Image (cartoon, rainbow, N blue to C red; front, side, top):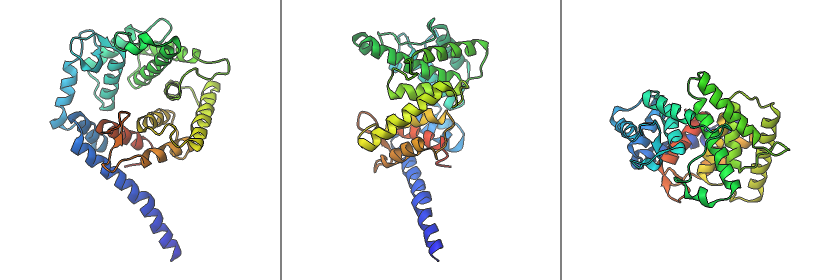
Length: 298
């Protein structure tokens, strides 16, 4: 009898609660999301691209510049932005759309890669890069390079792409202290760890081991000392998305703690707050994608 009561409690605590979180998030996106948000949501849930929402994809394609890139913030007539182009490629790959527009964007990214293997954004797009010091510009370059590597590894690799990714990986590995700890912020380390893992470096690689150890100490110790540390849903989503690339399971402490914090931050509306302080349908879809990667939802 007591065993049945306990099992019923466990069922309600975990299964019912997960279903409620999922249900509330889906309803929020359907109420407040854009056509693109809804297209991504249905693809996540059903694996199909709903025809009534495909106009959002066609609108994005129309903004593509002749060189293959996309202008920052979709500003028509502006030069192509490395960040925006990579973001668009990643979106299309998420939806399993690989066509000539994506291939030309990939070609553009590879052609503008720096000799040292990095990618950087022109200061014309981000005034903060002009005003910031060398350390900040380096951190942004590491972050951007790691992001592009994560994207390129998801495309069918040919010799030119593989060489481009290898150069980027070598750049990231070079951006370390003598103790093999990145100069950069936690966000950069998550991204770089993901890039290294996707390129084939195992968790037994000395640098990868050091990065994991650093992240565990940094994240878990800060959480225990300061409840406000890294509680941004977007940062937690970013961390977990990167860790998913390393094939970490939801049973590992760092992932388990991150997932727990993320679920706690769901609002009454069903979505999650972005860094500007309002409940964001796009971020909510991003989080649902991450939760599915850890098999948290069917």
